[in-house]
Image 1 (cartoon, rainbow, N blue to C red):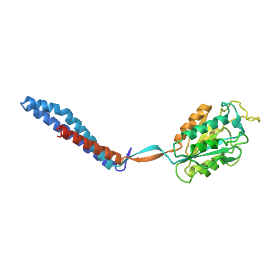
Image 2: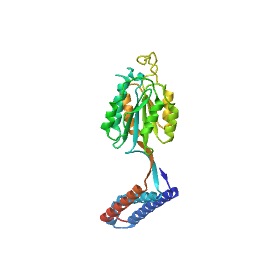
Image 3: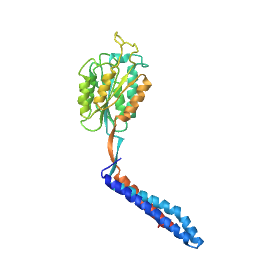
Image 4: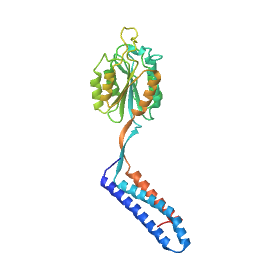
Length: 306
């Protein structure tokens, strides 16, 4: 928590402590006077009054502190959901996505996880889907209709061709608006071997305020070959980490369909959240006012007001 006027916050603390000390001192004087008074009934009344008095003094102290802190303009940084964000899923459809090291295949696991992502994003989020292999193809415009976005997944082509990650990022960026919370989620299993340089594309996109999250699917060193070729199905994890870093996002590698679904479900929430300053002055003032007012009303009703 930070304060716009920290010295005011310090002053509020001093005043609250001073009030508590005065209330305690007044209560001690009352008890001392009662001990000197010869009437037993008066002594018993004072003894019964003490817990109530201290309780009310504690509440009034809290109220004074809250009202003083409100004047100091407290605020906190919090990660909050954005209900009008925009995110584009980039799904790799290169030939290596036909590999079956992820059951039933990398392509099928990616499509199912993408459906989970779409179902999980907060209402109001606009979603787009880009399929890419040696080139990138937007499967539809941004939409906040989950059924429409899910239908777009049905147009993902079967695995074939090379991997143009840079082109996919550029196509995703073209779908996004120029302002607001914007993100790209890249799901790939390969090494870039076509199109523009992905790191340069990521740096340009990241500089415009778009967050980039990368997910590598598959198992490096598994010995799996890209179907129809003699090439190993590998992931360039270093490149994916650099792409995510350029977009102030994160990278994760997943090795099975369940893990991929869980990762995309988590990203469905992360991608449409942003860090904001939350002003606590009004809540503190309301809380302090309510506490002080209620304590005073109850104290008067019970005849416990000092």
